[in-house]
Image (cartoon, rainbow, N blue to C red; front, side, top):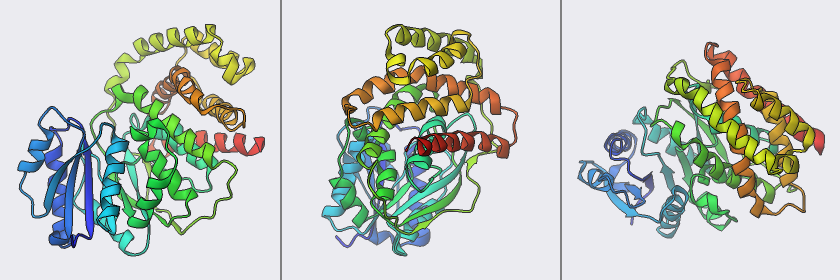
Length: 382
């Protein structure tokens, strides 16, 4: 085909954003690469709002195609990887379709390191302190604790891949949630354990469509996929490839947007009812033990919006230790992700209020301390 670079934009009902994202990607290609050697794909999972039509009707200098993919972000991306491998495309990248802050130079940032010998480019962003909850309270602590490299944004969404890495990803064991929003953490974990050359790329501020109302669904998919991958490699000796971490600021942004503050009280009442139902069924005693369950219950039964980061880290450490036992059945990951929702969301809400008036450095330290606590607990258990 003569194609050297392919950019995939996964989408499902992103008519409001797809044109802007496409225009920025095309501008980035024109600025730094030869458009004749590039192609942009809309990896669309049967959108019903005209996303595909808008993508195809937007004028670009770069060739573009809309690729109808199976439902689920993970399936769409794996479908894209297969295409790139089959057509011998050496470099590719994926960029989310709901971005408000994408700049044209993101394309160069993701692709150029691949040309220099890296296999995986992963973004470094600053994010609204009231967003990025799954990254802050699960994905970042997991990678920081289980693997020898603490990638700050393992769920970035904007990634670059060598053909060699794509081929590797297609061969790796997958859990059903990997085919959905669990794909990003699957990719980041496998980049480390596979010994690939990784480079963090500073992209600045990231703003995208609000994720507050998708927190539960996405958490469950990321949790199950991430823990499944870490279970596969728990006792494997990891030989790292070349790792180039960014020295630029990452994590918390000066930008503040907190519309869901007004619903916290109602949210906690709903979470409390679910926690008490699961507790009555004996799930927490089974997976957390009676002592830790009692500590969590004291906060949630009392309706206090101060579930501490240390307590959440203790919950995560206990759950991960349970998952890493030989007797643990991976089928139980679904139950675990479901019963963790009230505790996870309670911690997220507590953190919002805790860091609301902090400086960015202070707020980032709160997140980092959770990860340090989890790492310490897991290392101590080995």
